[in-house]
Length: 209
Image 1: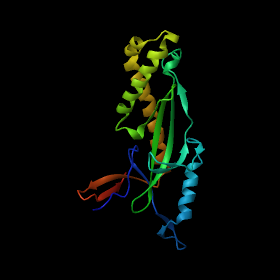
Image 2: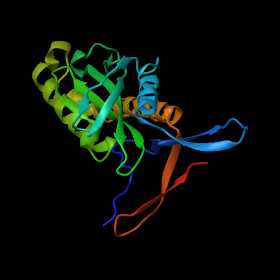
Image 3: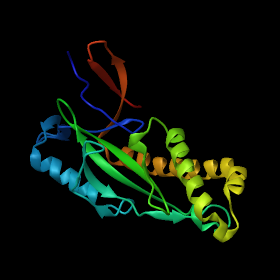
Image 4: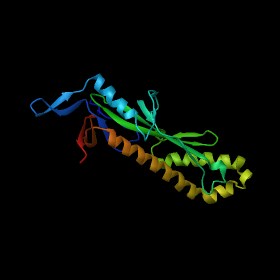
């Protein structure tokens, strides 16, 4: 039974770091070279130190089954005019690298959405942004039911605004996803897509573009 070399959880492409690279030899001819452990560590260090995700990390992320590289700056926003403080929502993301089953590695990421009460939702634990948003909205409704009266909100107000809040949070998540996608695409050696996947698990990839 074969196994696919690369696996991703949230990434929409296979943003790979290869274990070979091409460079000119002394005669000016392009040649393929094998990367060693130090080459990989240098690549990882270069990815870690960047301006978009400025906080380097060396933690093992069990949820992603991958090695963390760097985290972004967490944002905090409140829905609407900012007065409904119970809708305050935090968002952060992390870039990870996962070893290939046979060779190389692939970049991936996770996004975390948290309410003011500490309810936390990770994109990696859901099949879609829609599913994560549903749980987030349920938690938000509970908070507003308990504390919304402090700014003249109640569950009825929340239900009237629910679709707008859904669009608000989904838009923020999609923007964060795009930031992660662009970063991984920029930092990888090669973006791949699955060209064929066979019943025995064998998987063929092809280069994008």
